[in-house]
Image (cartoon, rainbow, N blue to C red):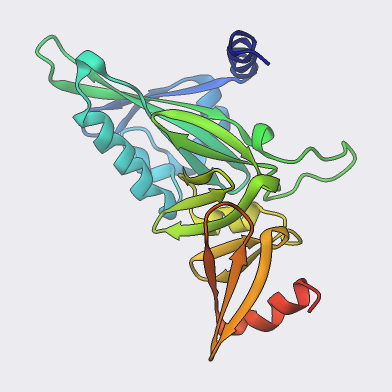
Amino acid sequence: MDSHNAGRSSLYLFEKFDVGVIHLDAQRKVLAMNDFARRVLPVDEKRPFDQLVTSFHPERSRPKVNFLLDEAQTCPVASAVPMTMIINIPEQVLLIKVSRLADERGQTTGFVLVFYDVTTLVSQERPVEDPPARNMRLSRIPMVANQKVAFVDTSEVLCLESQAHYTRVLTRDGYHFCNLSIGDLQARLDPTQFMRVHRCFIVNLCAVSEVRRQGSKTTLALKGRLPVEVPVSRNEVAPLKQALGL
């Protein structure tokens, strides 16, 4: 597909999605939102109006939202690029963009938070007769770089490494950045393909080339151009061997 058609395809893809819009004041309290945001977000339960925008985000997502707003606030208005982030909530994956609003003097007057529900875009398709899953399996992992969002097929992922609230995703091409935490990803990845072998690492079992033992330590060598060794926790050695048929 050439770049022109790829651009049109991407544009068409997002034309199919409804967009949620939330207006925040300078103190990051919710002033207003459109009808789609009211349908998607737990407005009746959380009652977010005149409350901080983080009030209706899961606890694990709040540092990310605050970081997003901090970054947007420091971005010069003259060249303001909307800050982008992926956030995981129990049944959905949201692509969020935040842009700062300013008055004629350049002083912050508020923010506009825009989100797309991209759950169907990154999840495996299921037969219509299947009941909806609380955590839909991911078939693609969303990654953010240079304020652009890309999606990588899970089959191309070698391993995932925890970086606090975020995750480094290793493919044959190298490392990528994902806004989702390793716990969020573990809950949505296929457990027959991916295994959490350490508190900081999830590996694609198909990407394991060697199991190495040195003293009491077990590590995994992965396929790919980069020489990567992944540590295995003692409690996970036996389940790992069983999963690999050893």
